[in-house]
Length: 439
Image 1: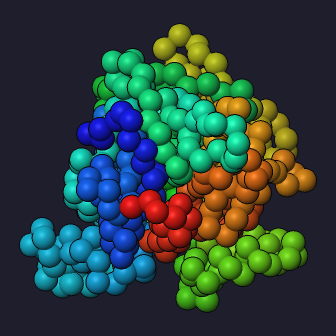
Image 2: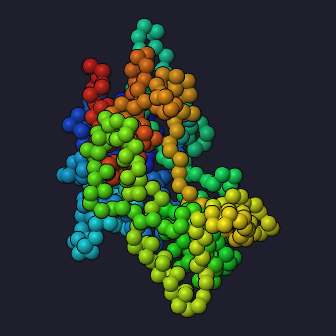
Image 3: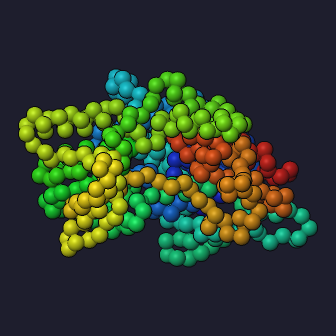
């Protein structure tokens, strides 16, 4: 638990998922070592705040046998520091599974094991993090009015609703992506977003689920469809896919270079045409695409049904959800097909919307502080290369974003692929910008 009071921290991290966990590691491993509370006045003092009661990362998508889509080497630290004590290999060694993992001959651990790794790393920062704590506002700390603002005040609300204050020279915002639902569709006990899937599913009596539907064309949609088909042998499973079918994720070597740290420079310093080309040619490396093995597994199940003369797994391709309403215990989905254009309805016991996420938007959190944050012609934050919002000269404090910077830093701005290098660059920036005489 972080101590608060009159002390001023060098950096306050808002959110403690993988991105800010990686930042905590980068700060601890920096030559100018971090001290959790600034004890003895040396190093970089850091405090982190997380709304969840404990560390967790996509817990509701830890489905059986699902694997990571990135190599285990793209962990919290290795690409920044291959000798880090916080690497996935160090975790395996600590867990006594390193030989067995090597014998498995697989670059892609299960999602469950990678979550164990993240929890293992997060546990080593227990004194630096306040769980069950939400930063509700960030504002300028009062000064003497003779110069730029040097400090920020954070209002932090704990699980009991009590609000305390913290002073910091910099903030790093990493509050995660926001679940996106189809237009006009609201979540309830029978309509779920994929981000809450396992929790919602476990609350149900599987015997009551005779007909379920999954909408979406990406990895989560395909994985949930497979899971429901296997777990509910008595149920009809409808896959509502806006495209003609699932598209394969391009993870071939040359395409994967788009996730290299050098590609961030190419994107950031490139022309508008350069950036447009990144998205046009390479968004199929991550967005609305599915791994080859998952696609083949679903197709195999569909083909086996044809052989057996059954039809429990049904694909509604080129179809979108136009509305949802409750009819007694059932959920009635209004559908619009792009084949023929005829509307139709589908009654299900549960609907899962694997419809992705909206980007992190910190404007509400920043409040009046946002007036110091400069924006481009499209209304998006102007960003420095070190992931710091470009601000007016009146604000000397750093406001860093881990996420929400796709428009300036490209496809990897919120992905695991570049997490170690990205966090290292932010840590280096914080250290270099410290006032002379501090620490």
